[in-house]
Image 1 (cartoon, rainbow, N blue to C red):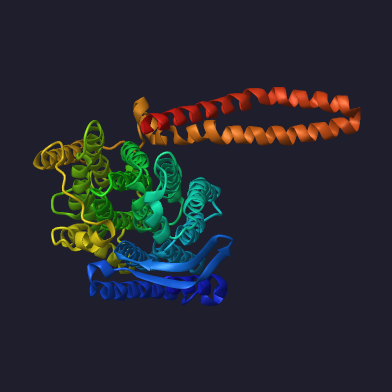
Image 2 (cartoon, rainbow, N blue to C red; image 1 turned 45 degrees about the vertical axis):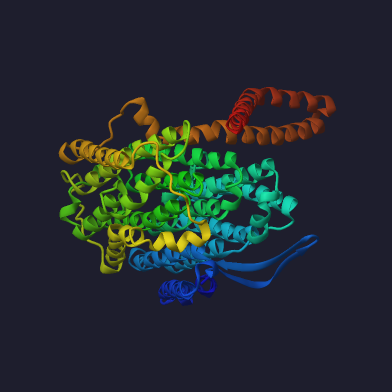
Length: 619
């Protein structure tokens, strides 16, 4: 499964221009071949007893350093193979779509090489049997995403977006490295079997620190608060990249990490609560930002952030939420990939324009795109019996389970956000496909070729029926039970029927309000200034301003001060002796004082607040 797409990446990236003609087709065929291998492995496991549905494949002795003896191996169990199916099936459809989308790009061979590399790295991440080998796939995904987001790096803004994604994810890597260091210091091993088997013997503090460090890594990879700033900028890459990263692969890695580490989180309620809080904040954050975006791809990116927040909240709930999170992850992979590919089809029709205020009435011009996009839209807003209705409503119901303040805070957050989701996704749908045509006279919208629309049709079918195929039948629940165990049934603090009715009413209200504002009424071609809240949402709630003030500015000021002081001391000493050099240095320090000291003080204040908040939560 891993070797086939990795082989494709090697052939295309090292084969050079001689592979231009047939390279993309080879990459696509190898991706589908990986899917076929995954299906064969699943059929093999389905024929075994539930207790034996896991294959441990030791490859070779990898690390031998003192007390650390680590083999490179794979773990093929229901959890990892569920991800394999999503990655290879949706990823292969995206390969097919890219054959049409990138047809005229002179570097398409390199693009398909990066796609194969991405799929191989993601498969290694989910199939690894240790945190160490998972980290290799983790870094491979980070590298491949950097290459794909910055694929058109001749545009400086796109290159900057790739750098931003890469750097933010390196911050998360600090958490992963700290977690592995703590594991080795505590358990003397990094493989899942040893770490998870011995977790019950570790102290509460150690488990909490490991859980929080893993959460830091998950926040970066899955674009969760406070490391979500890279996600919107990642839209700089070609649209198939957005579908791959934001639907089936990279952003789901953090959810996988927490779910795979269930044996640690089940023993540390404090870290588990932190996961839930992060998910709750992010699902609200993404929904608020999505309400104000006019760029179709950035609106979908905000939606992804919010939906991953639902999944993160669910895994933070513990055994009651693990299966629900994976279920929503699978259905989301279909309807979100379908909508991203639909956005690419819209861009194909509109000469690469992304401003929804200059769209409108496209349902009459690109009917296949409209219908397939409508399937994804209906699924994500929770139209009854469609995929998103099955999976997201289960998370909302689980969020209302518990005692004290938690079910009310987390439950209401998921419930209200469901209504907001219906509004901003309907806003996107109506601004793009309905109302009056607002495009320029020289644009003649036209449907994409079949090589692009067929993958969209397949994903639309999944958006409509996958939830019903997996949940009422018990297929997914029974498949994952050997991994997560049988979760005891708990009643929410509000009757389930009341929750379901409330979700449905809020969904209708969100759609109706969006129709009145953006379907029936005229949409201004230039965004009005709006209130402070609207302006804040357009700027992603000032996330970049905060990062600039608290993190980048202090570091830049420190570096500038050191470099300038070194220069002044050297030049002053050469021309006027030691005294002149020191006098020049004091002047530099005085000039740097305002910018550096203020920024550093703000950073320290933020750190103190964060520490006090963590202590309060643990209390």
